[in-house]
Image (cartoon, rainbow, N blue to C red; front, side):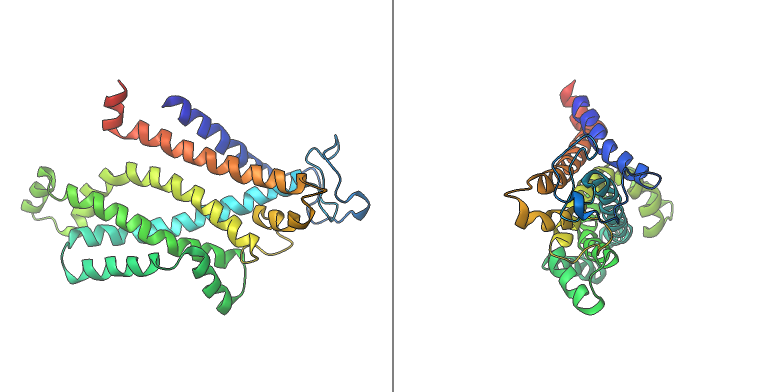
Amino acid sequence: MRATLILGFLLTGVFALAALVSFLWVPFDVAAVDIANKIKPPTWIHPLGTDHFGRDILSMIMVGARTSIAVALVAVGIGMGLGVPLGLAAAAHKGSLLDELIMRGNDLIFAFPSLLIAIMITAVFGASALNAIIAIGIFNIPVFARLVRGAALSLWTRDYVLAARVAGKGPVRISWEHILPNVTNLLIVQGTIQFSLGILAEAALSYVGLGAQPPVPSWGRMLADSQTMISFAPHMALFPGLAILLTVLGLNLLGDGLRDRLDPRLRRQTR
């Protein structure tokens, strides 16, 4: 639906704009500690209140948006950059040893959630935003590989692909010139979905201390810091939680809208 697409775009755009603006300006320095104004409720000076260190929550949410979006975007890029070629290769060599190795490798990765992968990486290299990106990116690889393989298998039976094979084109060239352009719509939609899941995963990792480390603001760590203060400072948990909720909701609505817009079968049904 057009309304779904517009609403998703607006919600996503608000937080993307906040992240971009935070590079140039924030109301208050997120690293500045002001104990005299700690745990203040929303006021004109601090529209979303302050935390237990006196830091402005609005400023932290703006910079936290930058952290969450960057981690999720790079992680999805890793998953797509590795998963798509693997999916294309598996489809081009269906039933071969290569196909079996790729798919069993995907099954192995799926057996370990991103949080568990992050714990293993952190145990070796330490907690950081980079390790969170690696963990989420690794988990995204089989998602895109399975998606592309499933879509590509049906395309390999199409007449234009058979004609390309008769013309002497090899599997790599056919995958690049004929298969990949026809699965791009699916990749765009799945990319928005994985982007929203990446933001949730980053928040979860930061919540348990495996994501971005202080002094870098993170929505997940803001929620973790507020847990012992919810009874007398609910705004510390409310606003970061709303930021996560609205961003994920916006990306999911954007994905649904793009799916309806790009899928010709759904377009025909709505006419």
